Amino acid sequence: MSAPDAAAEDGTQALLAADRDISGRVAPLDLYYRWESQHWQISSLNIAQDRPDWAALPGFLREELLHTVFRFAAGEMAVTQTLAPIAHAAPTEDYQIYLSTQIADEARHALFFRTYVDGLRAVGIAPSAIDRERDETVTVGDLFEQSLRTITGQVRTDPDDLARWYEAIVVYHLLIEGTVAMTGLHSLLRTIREHGGFAALREGLTNVARDESRHVNFGVLALRDGIRAGHRELIVDAVRRHVPAAACTMVAPEHRDTTPRLVQSLTDRPRRIGEQWQFAIASLGKRLAATGLDPETVRSLVNSFRQGCVDAVARYRELHGVDHPVRLESMDAGSLAEAAL
Image 1 (cartoon, rainbow, N blue to C red):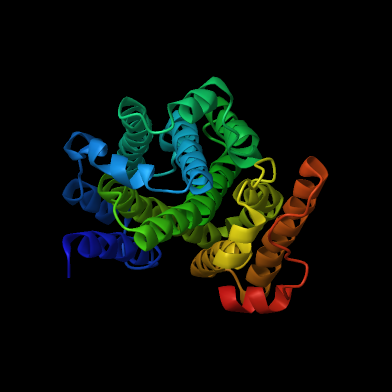
Image 2: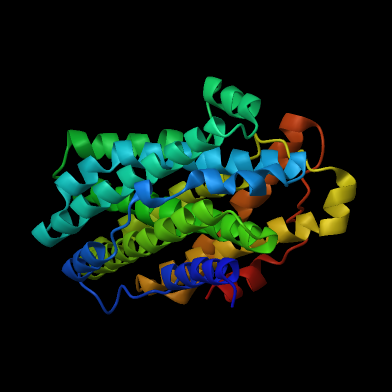
């Protein structure tokens, strides 16, 4: 296997590991020790080596990938700024110890994406696009911009309110990291694997995916413990209230798809985007099931997420006056929910 192929395989394996539920076999301190053994350094990445790979991309694809990188950069900064109250209010010392490592992880992720963007600018990759994105607010969706900041603000104000703490875990770990972020990482690494190259970006994303594996498993572990402790209804209610924002954030209806129609047809782009959304639906269902919720409740929550995708597609039409490349109305909600289980 060549070095690029091996690196791409590393990214794939990291995602497979991140998508594997180990929360039933580990405790918070086990995740802490994994953190100790899985350190990585941004300074070791040679971002300049990715320049030829970016330069070789068609303009529309380069813009799409840049937009994805910018969204990750904005999202990682948002979660970095809001995790501290969750760590402070965690109901056990072991939770607090583990969550302290996650704060460091999120800061490293935010700095990785910022450093990568600065590196692209330094080597002249679409500087006008980068400047434009920097000058404008990068929209990362209501899940980040409203739900996350609201609930973590409430946790900060009243750290003894356990219901709000579990709601924050739902928003942060289950929906943002376990559903939206993991889907984005899966899509971005798949695109990079298909095009080849992008060694620095691939290595950084692989490291981020490995970190996210720990984060998501902690969230499932904490929610399962909460359900066993009698907090099932408030956790289910929190998921149901926030899944529409999660679906809308993933679909991102405010972002106009600029891919030429001919290219969409030749690359089967609508099908590929639809597969990404189904990946998110399946991931959410898998993690909900791992918390110990009964299958009927999981199906109901998964279908709420799917309906949120449908609503976001309709919103895209309202905003841009054209149909979204993907149409979910024809997908059977029941079959998608079964697939998630």
